[in-house]
Length: 177
Image (tube, one colour):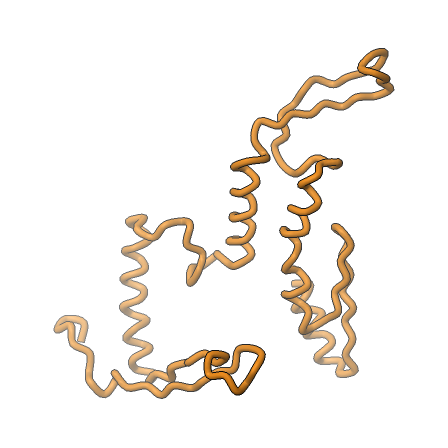
């Protein structure tokens, strides 16, 4: 098949199973179509995939900005990169700070030298708290089916309750691993 470039007609058939996604089960748009393919066609695809993916990555054809369907990438990394790029583009560049001790009206105190801020948002900024909320926003969504999360700024608690010990252990491991 690889040498001739042909794929057997029988392997071109699949059955589609609708998988429910969200909300109203009576709406067809709330289902994802999943194709059930033959094992042999999947093996064939895997061979082609490995060769093609190797070519694309070794020749740097796929852009680094694409996080979907790629090893060692995730939605979390994509969101982090997005927020970090937004902050860096208008807010987190060329910022400096110094430590001031016992200074009243900029006199009679001790001052450290000015240093560039490499990471983070200064305490006391107006935009910082909102940006932090965006950064941690999806934490509760990612575990809400396994626990009752409670967030207050950077303090997070997960209430995990299940009478079934096996499910309890599973949910605990899923959240903390």
